[in-house]
Image (cartoon, rainbow over all chains, first blue to last red; front, side):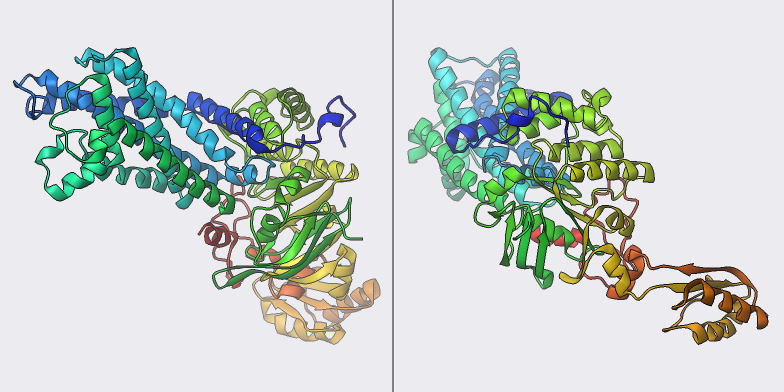
Length: 285
Length: 350
């Protein structure tokens, strides 16, 4: 069929398997998704505009109107510093809708079928996608931090704590991208994945301590907010950044927010990764 | 000895629809099997099962001697899939697409790179190698898709309606590529709605409808089954159609088919050219003017018609869909052929 070439002897696929192949395949797919992001920069740019808008709107529109309990004075910069962890957390979770839309798009266009017919590691298509999304999220967080500093946000606890806070944020974002992946595999069109990937994020991020202190919520909502994985990460970041926390609830996750955030994120990854990979293996375009 | 593709008793249901209803297939090594049938007949489902994309409800399948259900990942190393449901990433360049597929076939990055270049040249895509695939024409995209399926020169290839939606020139080109491939010893299972395509490319043909194999054999064998030649007449005056039909029936070995709008009468005959002369004389004697007359040998279309009760083309409502991959195909067939491919896949997504 082909004229004899140097490659003919080496075309037999290498027998492979195990975690090494899984890592290799995931990186190949991640690279593909990162190339796509470079070729469709609009997606990345819109992903940046939204959180920047939120920072500006919340800081200047709500800033003076929302007092943070336990903090004296009505200096709007107190709310800005209180708010910022919430905006960071919202940004990393909202980025997950992209994972769902991307995977739904691949399903729709038949690419998932191509991948599934290749001798590649089972979870690699999804892992590659979530890794690429993590890179994009990290980029967004960097830009957002700069904007935050411009509007007056400051950290007070040193480099290690600050990096730990960003680590927890990215881990939360990574965990949520697996929920996005599952949504992407479960719907029929990319459009459905985008809206389906967003609607549940509104109650999740608003019934939390992200934008207003939970102490004024009805007790039923307050309990949800206190145990919300999202709240745990926000609270952990406030502590690690040395930002105002308001009056902190006695619920366990609010008293140990870094641990709570870590545990929540790991559990979400384990559950939704397993579920998504199973769904991927049985999926049909 | 079982062939490179061997399946027994494949059954797959989607809700109430039996997409595959006990399908047996055998494709000897180095040959081409044409799987022929209208939309929704079960062709795509069969390919999806054999390429490990779909679990059948029952039945067994072996590809390249490997059990598809028990060792799917080993099967994936030996197959290439192209056509309706395989695809390329439109934001990646041709080269990047092929390199990615190569690496996912577990070739080293270096070999994947060399191989990508080889395939781009072979499929006349070298000039467009570094352009994103979304800038490619339909024919170029299809060639890239086929190249992706050939990255490891797999011994067994599956092509699902590879030329659907292509213009005649691109179709011709793709046929030549496929013929070259097969002459190199590749075993190929090809689904198609184009009888001409099956006639030209396939050694053996399997006609399926409603998930069942309704006929199999070589193209010649199938044509012989439909019972030889026919005389076809187009009369000048529609009012004389009844009289002409009466005349024709006198020569016929079966029932006459009358297409009123076309003023055309077709009857099965034996006796060849000599009979044709007699028909012309008789029609002339009765004063029936004719626009056209001819002796027709059976085509696969006739085979299809006689087997399924409807023509293949009738069922093919999306012939010119750009890209041809539309999962929304198979609407309004008007022949009650059941579920379309689009429905099949939607069902499968649940």
